[in-house]
Image (cartoon, rainbow, N blue to C red; front, side, top):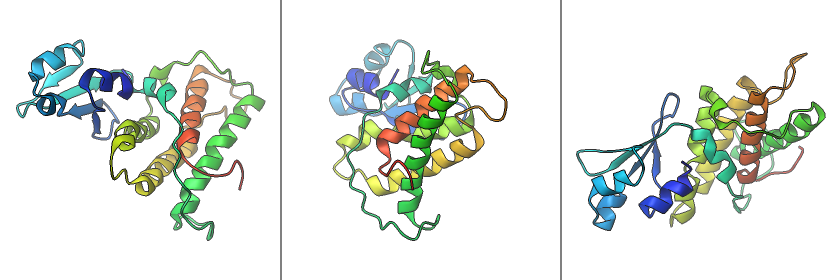
Length: 201
């Protein structure tokens, strides 16, 4: 289930917990806030939720990659200076993340990476999972009075840089395009919707 689908059942977006390297977990205090029996709300999640001793729900999502297609653009002003273009400048970190995600879309087209079918279960590498974990925070941040966009964007960009370098979205060398590349190109497209920046630096 996507964060939006979970929010429909819970009445509010759940909060991602942990690193998601091995297991994609959300927690929610929705039952307590709404004055509902936690077990009844858990039952509506079709076995994906466990009621903890404190009344919170612990929700495990088997295929976290499904959230990729639910990511919507974020309209956040670009507040950082453009220079210096070094890793010490958070503006560069964020903008370069956007540039890399945009480049992946061009390279995928040039290298013949199919646009589909999208198999979200293939986004299982720890680097892919790290990006998904940060993207999972979006629905909650959109509703927050203090979303902390600047810190969030740096975290997303940093996770994406790691994925870009260590879990390539396009074929390397003579490798043919594979379904994994399609999934990672789709992940890059989600990142592109969130990180502000130019198409090229």
